[in-house]
Image 1 (cartoon, helix red, strand yellow):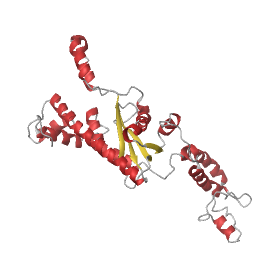
Image 2 (spheres, helix red, strand yellow; image 1 turned 180 degrees about the vertical axis):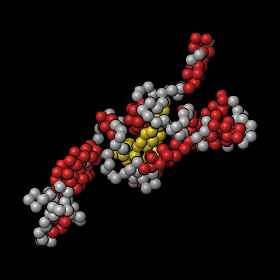
Image 3 (tube, one colour; image 1 turned 60 degrees about the vertical axis):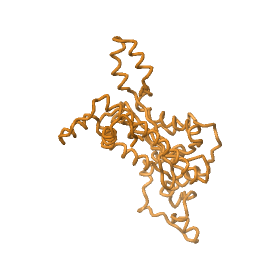
Image 4 (cartoon, one colour; image 1 turned 90 degrees about the vertical axis):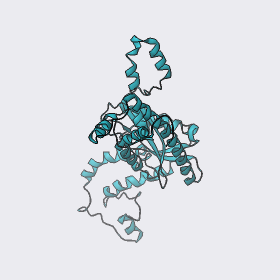
Length: 321
């Protein structure tokens, strides 16, 4: 625990309240129920939180730098990495004022490689608005010495793609690595945004794995769509396709219409295959990665910054670290 002007108990109280997802009002209720002295005043409590945030930021940078080098080492010293990414709003709905985004490695033991946050509100700026007309000089002094937390002005729904794109763009300067493959979910426009706004100079892309995955995905549909008069097993695998196994052993295979899915049902399913098994969609999942690590991290984050309770960007950044 760093020594200084602040009492250790106040620093520990700020850390503990963040870990428990409590603001100062929640801490006051807890201490009141325990018949203990109330915490320091609101402005002092915020100062202690910002004091803690400085150390959290430093520890976060060291941890993420080490995680990047671990990922590079596992990739045989290649500095082109595959990452999984996900974003989240601080509160539910499409009007959240704060958002976060994280990128994780796809190594054996995945870790956070980079994280960022955005905010559409600065509590201190709002509180100082009353000074604008009362004391212009004091307001000007505040503005020049104040680190504004407002760093995003777009729609809340565009937060994720903007934050992920920002993290991609700074990877070369920050870690000297490139994120060449991205694993994302289907409810965001991140992949299409990264494709239309390349964060790195254009590189030649190999489509061998993508073509293979495309054929293997559509082989499932074609296998069930086949009949004796129209077999469609060219993309099937002999390990599971009874038709190819019979053909390999010189036997005749008959498609049993009773056990097959009717073509009328398959015709109704086909649009789903077109959407999920298009090359654009499959390009996101080459490598077989997942976002489980990102989701696990977000679950941990929610214990410190619950969605049903508003918190300042200082608490959000501390929880993110």
